[in-house]
Amino acid sequence: VQGTYEIAPGKLQAVAKWDTYDPERDLGDDRNDTLTLGATWFIQGRTRLMVNYSLLRKEGLGRTNQFLAVQFQAGF
Image 1 (spheres, rainbow, N blue to C red):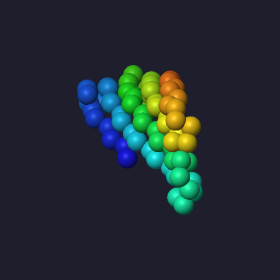
Image 2 (cartoon, rainbow, N blue to C red; image 1 turned 30 degrees about the vertical axis):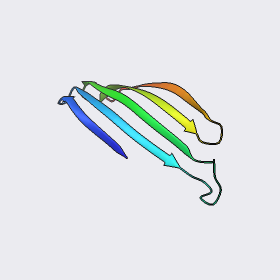
Image 3 (cartoon, rainbow, N blue to C red; image 1 turned 90 degrees about the vertical axis):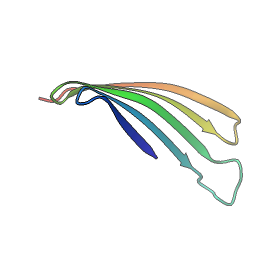
Image 4 (tube, rainbow, N blue to C red; image 1 turned 45 degrees about the horizontal axis):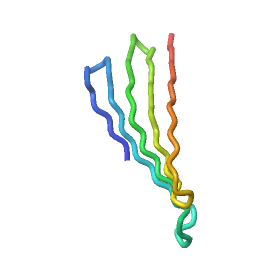
């Protein structure tokens, strides 16, 4: 499931995404869930900066990993 919201139309966009994956539905404790919150800043034309913060939960391990991804994209 993914959704976006235009904070400032054409300039700033918020993103929320939730993924779940269960490779063996017959087995327990193997599901992975990922929650991602982020923003996209449209600098000019096809140039943008994207920042995403994600929480990855692996059911069998009982812990949650966090990561931050930053991407700059320039189009010309």
